[in-house]
Image (cartoon, rainbow, N blue to C red; front, top):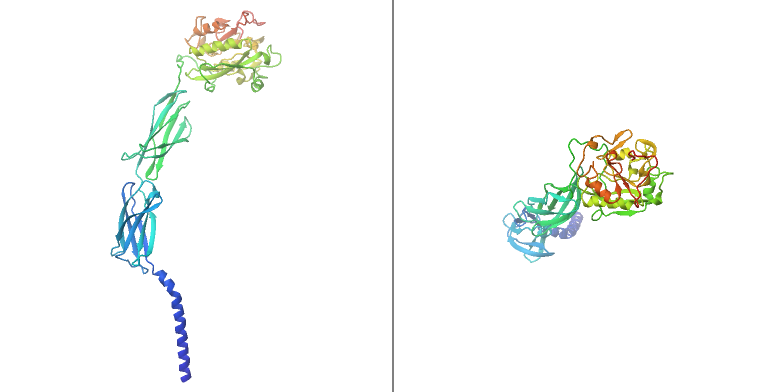
Length: 464
């Protein structure tokens, strides 16, 4: 029995020693778990309005810690600044308020609890949530802009209450039948306004899209900006037939006025001509031809840039006549090189029928006379110019082409039935003879150095 008692005493001492070691090892963890828990919440508010900050302090056991002092601070310009202090109530809550800024970076707030020893015992930080104000974006400006001129568009950005909004606004543009595409950004400043200049060459639609950290996103109503011609459009009679073929508008004019430029035939253009408007056996070769690029007024009143090929000896006369037509506002429907219309087996050259059906103005085309196979046309020599061919028909051997109606009607700007018409007089002043009169109203021949063009096989009949 004595031996058993000693053994039990020894075992009891060992157990006590182990428990003491475990308790000692557990003390740091116990101290850590005893740290208070601090949470922070903020109510959502508009910029410029107060958000209520609520700090909740609890002990390690989750029970509220009343009577504790909590310090509230706000981070501004990279520095924490004290807002105030408050004492926790019976529920362990302390409150304060902060006026929210427009920049979320300035709405970072924190709560700090310092214990009785003056040591920081708990701290937490959050970003106070902003409630976005309703934004109103508007884009305005003139309803019309004259082609080649600029228009000033203005953006205004306000809150629903009328407060200006400073920030970045995205400008979007759409063409007729197209989709919206971003084209630029502008910045509104303290007054909530911005302006920018545009120079559209067609009708355009505009809108502004904006959002800010403190203002909800908004898209402005669409603003349409009509592009109107700088010149006078052509008004044709309602009964007048329109060209059977439609050509796309040529490029916009280049430079001021008619701005004629005469050059030799570039390689690329010559390749397009060969086999269409020029072929082996033509009476004039590449060296004897020139390319004219010149501005003209189209029927809609816009400035376009056309081109034609003519003989080197006649190109300046044609250029001067077309330049005077430009200065005096006499329009041309289109001025494409005849190569655009392809080769015609009927004409043995560029397709003059298709060109006339499109109301095209052109000069050189090594082909037969329209309606007279085997007879070379004056255009083959590059000294003939056909102008506004739809409204000024040609009386061919097979009848009037390209239409009959216009043969019996004139127009003060685009159709001539008399040598007194201003366009005929302009041509005459620059040595371009209205050779066949009413027999071929579209056709003019260049008189070079006082010598009119004589084409074998033409005789006295209209020869185009």
